[in-house]
Length: 245
Length: 245
DNA sequence: CTTGACCCTCACGCTGCGTGAGGCCGCACG
DNA sequence: CGTGCGGCCTCACGCAGCGTGAGGGTCAAG
Image (cartoon, rainbow over the protein chains, first blue to last red):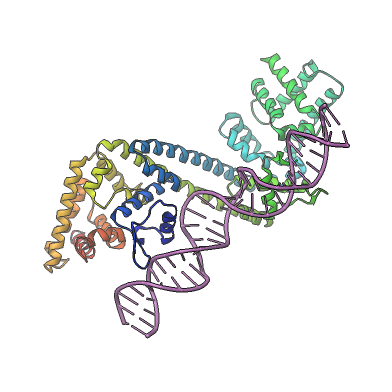
């Protein structure tokens, strides 16, 4: 009957159930009868629906005075923008994944496992993309990393492992994190990043170190080498950054 | 225990339930025990999840050979792009609504009802925005329409009503839709559009007429004046377009 | 009188978990 | 040794917005 308004019958029932648009009458047979006013209301509901509003919100909106709608519209715009952001991030991540997949000849899954062991870069890539995707260092890093082959990664991880091991030895030996020796290792660590990934200033390096202790996942990779290593490296890096500040 | 992987316990339970990531063992107390392999798998799941894949799809993906993933990734990209399109359309529509709302002093809801009666432009605005939002005529129309005030709309609708009424009289009088008289009215109709909305070529006019009979909602506004009027106007417009082709 | 096209009322299903409720572990503290 | 406290466990309902039958009445046309 009235489903020419471009909505399914089920939707009308639903709106009726939740009280959003209720027919002003019923026929003897129980058919829903919508009068002009009902249709007017329905059209408004559909209008707001196409703007992405939730049905609940539409109900409130239509019960509230005109001036609230402007606020609601701007709020809705903000929400949609947010969604757009998330979508963009996803698309970027998918693109990165596609690139990585095509570049699979450079390093496939199995090799990746051989190289990184249990630290699979994929587990972190998407989040990193979202958090730092548009910062200069990250872009630089991504740009340079995409051409690295298996041998490169082996070398890089070997170097990183060596640095960590040196840190661990210093820790074992009771050398203070603020000592020259520890600071030297911190500097090595920074140079390693500069050489292979991005221009890491002492300042940036310190932020990175904050994350080593602040983020359990990073911390775990250090703790796996030696308990307390995450904190130790952090302290050394901070000391080194202060010395070079 | 293992919720340091940035996922809630409930999510782990869920993945277990649907068989996406199942712990390889249980402790005596019934605790889920995830080994290295399980964690590896979990990370992959989380990775794809961040790319916006549905959990079902992730399951299939991970069970399929490597070369399928490239396809899946591209497909996913397409889907995300589509969502992006929809979002953009929504945002545009919201913007239009905000503009209309701010321009409310030009014409508020009540006046709008007085002018348009049961044809509320809002009921169609969003869809129109989506279908033709980036065509030249639509933009032109929107641009010009936004400054019209109540008086303008009254005049415009009065003119349109007069034209429809003339069509209806011709129809009543049994005048053929392909006659000079009907074609003249069709031309008046076209000029009315050109004057108030956009540069409507005879060709474009014909497309519009197709919609008058193809879309129930448009048809209904004509049928409300006289049964058969939609078809009649359509035929007259087509004839006129052919004559001026 | 019979079709076929609509309408009606339940009522479950989908996505991806969140959020208790009610209860068992395990470790630290007193 | 008891007693918290924080973690895990298993149900099981809830959410948003309808889609999709199942089972059955209604209405105008043939």
